[in-house]
Image 1 (cartoon, rainbow, N blue to C red):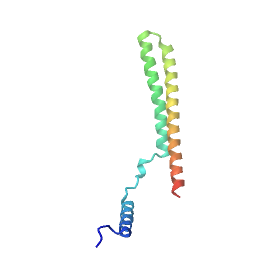
Image 2 (image 1 turned 180 degrees about the vertical axis):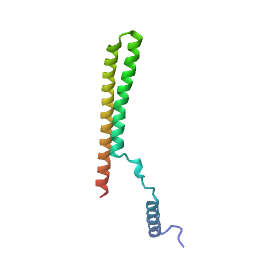
Image 3 (image 1 turned 90 degrees about the vertical axis):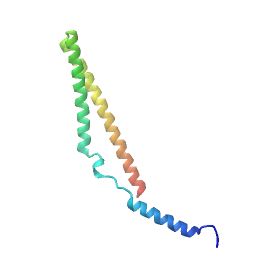
Image 4 (image 1 turned 180 degrees about the horizontal axis):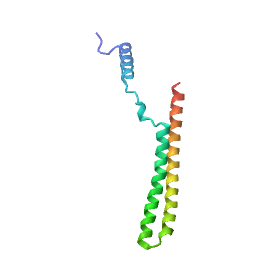
Length: 109
């Protein structure tokens, strides 16, 4: 009797183990993926929060310095610009995820 294992039996065992692992692998949950509506709401919230923060800072500084309309308008515009920048970054992130998923699906076919 030989001390070396039979390579054909080991290969068959490896194939069986790989098949079982593949069958029992957890499947991604559907709710983990972003739907178009949740992506849109995330972008709207980012824009509105930028406006709100800019408005709050401008109003607070105007009350502190007594220059009511000037800093309010300035920081509201800056908040809008920050919100748009964040919203565009999020859109690019979603686009990159979509392209990665499409290329992964193309390679799998």
